[in-house]
Length: 96
Picture 1: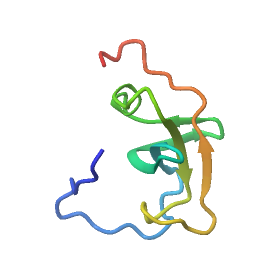
Picture 2: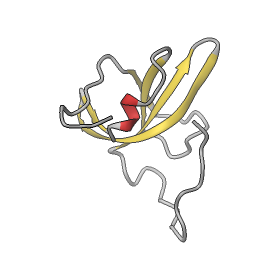
Picture 3: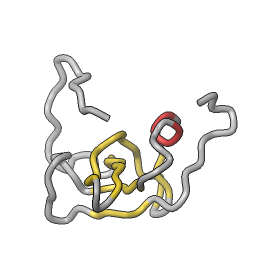
């Protein structure tokens, strides 16, 4: 799950300009701290939408969490919210 730069000639976002964006993070606490694996979008207070591979291609062990209110992915920020993922559902037509 290495972070790589995949955007070419992009522009930096204004901090907190996209409050519906979240960081989906995987870890095995306390052995492996949580780290960003995918992005997602808030649908409502209970649901996050992300790409199918973000839930089907992660290890079965460990835990997922969602962090909202972030601008910098690798540091804690005031006002961010963290929620444990309780349920993962892939679309029934997703081939993964």
